[in-house]
Length: 189
Image 1 (cartoon, rainbow, N blue to C red):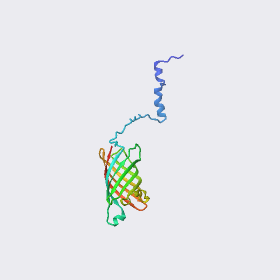
Image 2: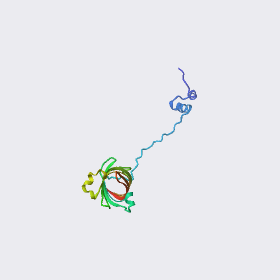
Image 3: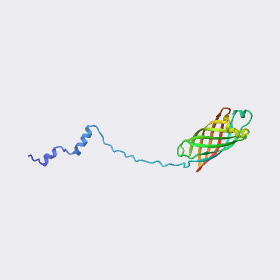
Image 4: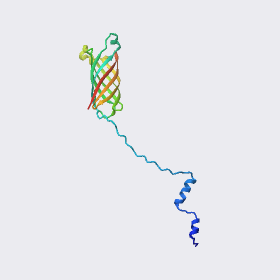
């Protein structure tokens, strides 16, 4: 057994793991950089629209080419009710009264985009029925009075629970077709 003096042991390379690691890292062209730890951040919602149902009174103008040629510009007022539902689309039921003594009832599916934000654009598609005063209750059995309706609208929250609402709808039937441009407000609860 050979005994080494302290002087000889100093000349011998140190074989501890800590002294060999830097050389190994340098030989393999590796670098050690500190890992950046990302903290998960939660975005705080600046606004949340909490209501699932609403009632919406409105005023509207009817753009019907046949009536415009005769110099008439029918107008009206109406109301619609958004049926509460957790998921989109939602059902909307409406009733309108025109200035020419006719009325209209409608049922449609309304898809609201960004339903929990201040600005809530939507589209809707549904069926409508024009109730004609001269036909009385027989109006419901006349298939020519039924319409396919499509619309686009924008709702913007003014102050909880009230929103301003603007909407353009197209109605297409077998004998009539027209556009409705409406302005109103929506009251949610």
